[in-house]
Image (spheres, rainbow, N blue to C red):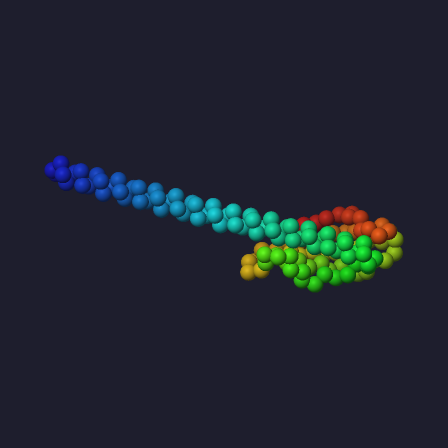
Length: 131
């Protein structure tokens, strides 16, 4: 094999290797980007669930009863709902509330159950379970 032929083959193999490395790097960057997006959406859904808790607490402080929250739009596609298992109006009684929050256009949802104890004009959190 002549020197120019050997040099040409070497350059072609180096270009091929660099192309493969570049493709792998782009694939890893895309996977990292999707992972980051997923984490951001999960964090937004969790913030939505917490916002739903605060809305429920504020409405209870204002009205003195726990009212079911239909889908509340929290902005940027984030929504939440809260549905109590029953009404708790007696001082010291327990109340179970199911919370769900998510992002429109994605399958991401955060669910949770909170047990409250009615304490005057406030709801005291007894236990939280978040999925």
